[in-house]
Length: 163
Image (cartoon, rainbow, N blue to C red):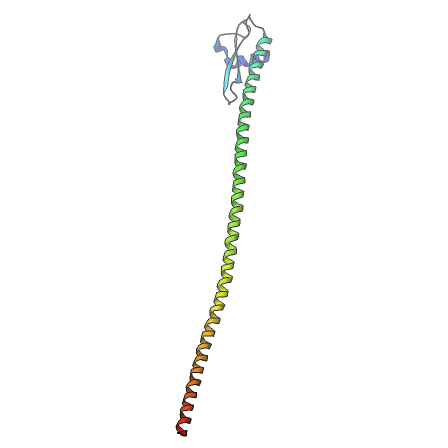
């Protein structure tokens, strides 16, 4: 207590108008009051109504209350962080589901593109075959027509010689 009182005296200085040996002098100590980094000047009175132990107990009680407030504040902050983490986990889960769904859609698109490519290649082969067969049919029909024409001319020539 004496050490605390001497530190308080240094803070107040002699401008307070009290000497360290007087029965009633003001002492100050910088104690955290709200846990937010702000300090408050606490005046202890070592006068006839209270003894040093009671004043020290009051300081300890105030420090305990401040510590309790700080613990409550930190607990609320931790709860807020935990809630934010849970929200983030939920968002990540939704995002992973979207990625899986988009992957499935991309796989379907890829499969359909491959199927269209195979179908287009098959169609190209069929068109080539159809063109060949049309050309061969024209040739065949031309050959048949010429053969028939030759046969008719031959029959006409034979008939002319016979009659």
